Length: 237
Image (tube, rainbow, N blue to C red; front, side, top):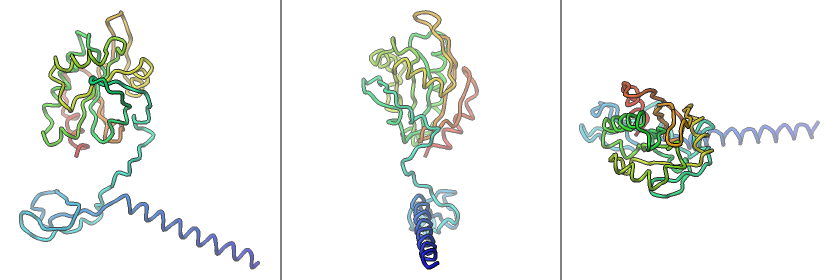
């Protein structure tokens, strides 16, 4: 009986320690935020205590509004789990995880397309034009080629310059045939080669958050992009 009592005490102690560690872990993943009690700046919040720059009152702790801190982990639904290598228009070799940390606006095209792709390019440019300058730095517009055998990094670079899409917020990707197919399946994009220089394909623009999780898709050409813009602005700091 004494031995069983000893075991029970040990189990209680271990469970107590685990419970404390779990609580600390949850606490470590959040941080307190502060706001002017008069809300002079609307819903604007601060990570540290201080004074409101408008009314000079002390900032107050916002109850039940802890800010989640990114611990660097990704979910099973993230495209960053894909391990295929890609070549950018600058000739760099990357994986999709290298795009982590920004909102991603992605579309699949091919540079020799004369029908749908120019309209998809125009749709991407239209989305970019509606994003405030202060958010652009936190967004990456990514064009993925469905014709990797033709669309070399050099050709993608020339296409980017021709379409005035060679600023830092634009990235063009050439993958392997299998890598492109795998990525297309994730996006539910269908494409098929119908001649050596022509493809039929879905017309879908996909929005991913900074953790690579699919948040929204816009399907069609020249469609109303109000919901797409609202989604991008909502998830982009």
